[in-house]
Length: 81
Image (cartoon, rainbow, N blue to C red):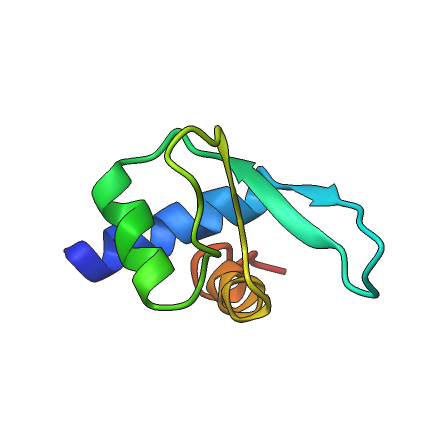
């Protein structure tokens, strides 16, 4: 059950994210931090989210987090053709 919660939380973060433009060559995806903190902590420990400050209201997905979220889209959001 915990794995499903982690996967679905990351998927929701990805689907509701926005691009954060910066001076680097990579634009990061941000999402609001409106999910259980235990799940956010676990996703951060696994390397799918960047560590964040306590007062930040958003989280930032890592490249690994985005890649997994894209795979989860295929897994959970299958469309019959």
